[in-house]
Amino acid sequence: MKAITVKKAGGPEQLQLAEVAIPKPGVGEILIQTKAAAINRTDILGRQGKVAYLPSDILGVEVAGVVVDSNQSDFAEGDFVMGLVNGGGYAEYVVMPAQRAMKIPESLSFAEAAAIPEVFLTAYQTLFWIGQLKRKETVLIHAAASGVGTAAIQLAKQLTDATVIVTAGSERKLEVAKQLGADVLINYHDEDFDQRVLQATKGQGVDLILDFIGASYWQKNLKSIKTGGRWVLIGILGGQFVEQVDLFQLMSKCIQLTGTLLTPRSDQYKAELTHDFIQQVFPYFEDQRIKPLIDTKFSLAEVAAAHIRMEDNQNIGKIILTVAD
View 1 (cartoon, rainbow, N blue to C red):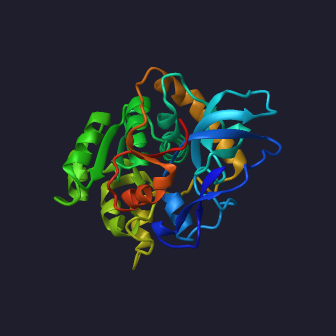
View 2 (cartoon, rainbow, N blue to C red):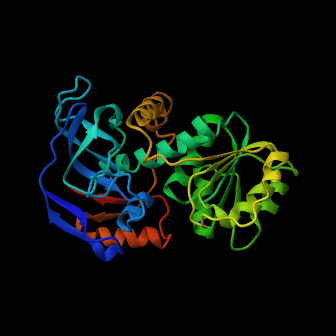
């Protein structure tokens, strides 16, 4: 089969299209003929050699496709499924733990389905499992036009009718966030987001922050969160080291700060999260109250260009690799 492998840790030029053996499903796994896969920041870190928790030499953690080999009672050959894989998604075939597989709603194409597992499960986990977002609360979502950001806006609005405050770096990205349900739009190039947040919340701050940025937003996030608020750190696009952290600021505001990543979580955790997500969110996909947002599509051979687009922060929503018709 054709697959994308990495010659050596480095830039997009290290990605190569190669012929490799079709994987064999083990106990509790199903074999998928991949129709579409999606690009994630985890893939870029893997290509750069900065993460070591994926067992596969082939990148890609989310796919949509057709079951071609299954000994699981819940899935049969020919079923259309999507889900998280332990690497190997940039390939014509991939094995998937059956407990993580989700049957694709009829309203979705393979490309749309591939845009769901990583970002929507991450957004659902951070908003509700960790962030404990409740009805009518206020949430600040950074990187609003990213895959997780566009998913989080919709989930927060549809499931809890939260007041959604977002940041992004262009008016085009903010307009998309508005169409998805965002209430307060902040261009971080033009204004200090913490001041707008306090203005929008009458000086109280937000109940929850979804933080993809990290170090460069530390002080402004502290100012933006209310006393007793929850702060979930899920990215470090703005750096990982914060100098001279005043821990008393966290203590005095009774802030709950939680760091998380989804990819290195256990198979059991991901299975439980997937099951809960199916129960709570699938009805919204089926009647299209929530929809995955696709930015661009690339062929498997164009994967380097897809990585460059993500690294340059050009995308609004998900970048998709089309693997087969």
